[in-house]
Image 1: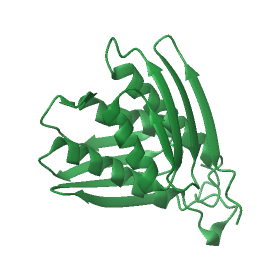
Image 2: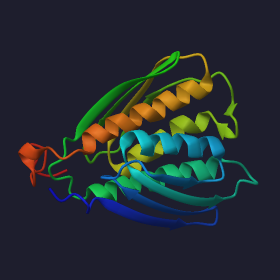
Image 3: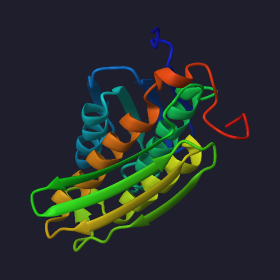
Image 4: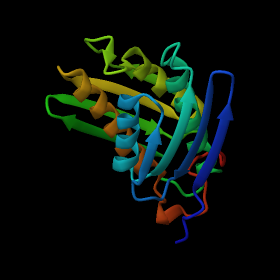
Length: 199
């Protein structure tokens, strides 16, 4: 079946950030990510690689102030890209979940590509930063992604001691859940997976 059309190219420019993002949902996990925040690049690469999404992100932000605007805006644009690439969301599985370990850390993510933006994130970190990524922005980027992506997102950190491992488990779990939810269900090709008839 032809799935090559599930792509998006988003450009967003404000006085705080300039972002270009390319997404292919039906990719192989090829990533080229440069946000200026190394740990965030690493997390987005986990998302692309383990979700099998081709993802290219180029971001320039006011990092001389702090990382907030750059990370938040990339999360927003990433959500917009998924919303655009999914289109009417015909034929998709729609819901997905994953439980992913990263050494001592364990993360659970459940997603519903419902057309309604909502996020519930339960994850705590011991440090204020992981390298140059503020840990409070991890919750924020999930929320921004869910709202702009028009999806329900539940994120829960079940175990963990090392903050890097915790964050990586969360992004890998998001990747696997999204991979499941965005798949085409051959039994309902062309149909909207909702009793409403629209998403």
